[in-house]
Image 1 (tube, rainbow, N blue to C red):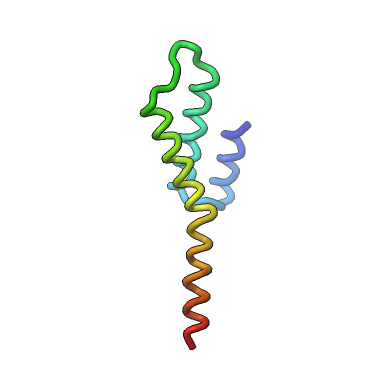
Image 2 (image 1 turned 135 degrees about the vertical axis):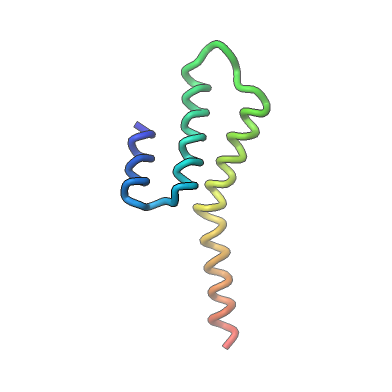
Length: 78
């Protein structure tokens, strides 16, 4: 189901390819963690998943806020 939603975002061009790749990595990590009982995720796996999540949150929330703040500064500098 999540894969289908990610593919829809990709098809509709709502996210750049780099963000689609990032979401796929988080999805695959989650699938492995939930469905494979052989091994627990390593610290490195968890760290990489956290990094991917941080990158997505930066893209989705921090970056737009920083762009808006910079735009506001330019508009108010007149």
